[in-house]
Length: 299
Image (cartoon, rainbow, N blue to C red):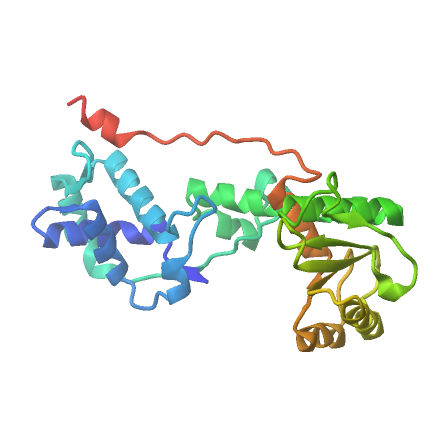
């Protein structure tokens, strides 16, 4: 995904303010700056940060802040962006040479290289990120690292303990309770590989069978077919096949054709554990931003 560097967005922001007579409400200013970049894709326009905010809106807000610090935009009025005489002078000198630029946004940057500041292409990509985007990059790298660590831990468990962890995952997702028996670990050998059952409703009317396997290699189609047969024989509504590895292409196709079997591979399982807080500790990071409305109210 290619987006404009913040340095390239300074002149367009000054330009749209000048063309509007010197000032604009911030929403309108942001929209008009985006219009200066005709090659922006829908993906770039709708891209969001981990916080949920629009990525481009965030970048333009940081451009505005940089221009306020340079004295080229007046930051004294909340919600209104106003060009200064210094901003007009710069615009007059530099606008004729401006053209829109786009750079590839890489959201997976080596944590060690980023911290050490190594002169790599990855860090060149990092150099034009806003502070929120930098936090996104570090968070995404951290999540990938934790996923890998979770999978390593799961693969070291014995079969019965892994089945119990899967039961806890299902409990976190709202498929019943281990305590009251609406989620039950059976751990039977044979019988199509059924390791337990849970339910989609509190009364247990919609029954789900699950199989939990700590495998290294891709799950073969015959294992999936056997489990599909077990679901049918037990007259269950659905099935879940959960593994620490992955599924072969044919296995995925077998499950798709059945219409009632959901496959969860190792990466998806680790992601669910992170999202539900199972087996991980969550440390909060306080991110501070100036409250523009507070300071505007003081003047």
